[in-house]
Image: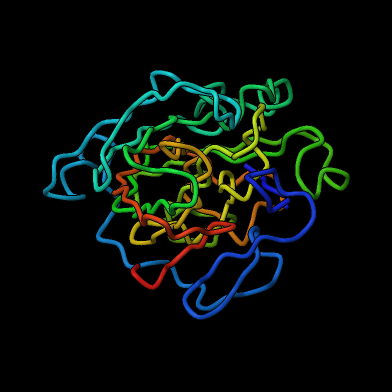
Length: 287
């Protein structure tokens, strides 16, 4: 889902743009700073299903982090749903951005009446043992396995083009292949995570749709399998959460949505002790 800076102490973004590193270039979250390197999708050996995602990611024991207890807001007071050691590999199974309110058979009428309070649910929080304020959480994206369908649409009053396209729109996609057809043009699928972040340092509830300097809904299309994101830690345990799987997204979500899809993300989570960041850093040189 669409994202929009305060860079201090984990406050939501309000003032300055937050920058993420792509190899040796810098690009702004949402792609508004222009192109940053090649537009080619990462090399992929086919699209695994959610059922076999864990088998191809790593030989290390994988700890499941299913979303039995979703939370809506970034809030450091939310109790951890899971506790893991640094260096653990987890399989984070996340619903789509509508939290199951939409299906492949949905219509524009369904998206017109959707309850915004349910959008962009967060899977977690995951407490990482030993993490403390001033550390950096390293999250390696090992594998992203989509469900067999996804959707895109126009929601009422949502997105940068809402004034120009006021009518609701919905379209579902079959994601069992390696590409999709948009008006006669084929686009390779490029699974990515829209949301990865930790709890902000300030108390209170912060919505899941805007990003913060602790990460969150950054919607950067380079957060694909093989990428590594470095997140500043503002609380004991870091309190990692994620979600908002995409089958394909451009440079940001101008319409407010990408191709939204349920997704299982296999992630390796580790710590850099005493190495503080003020905002997330995305390294895609490892893709």
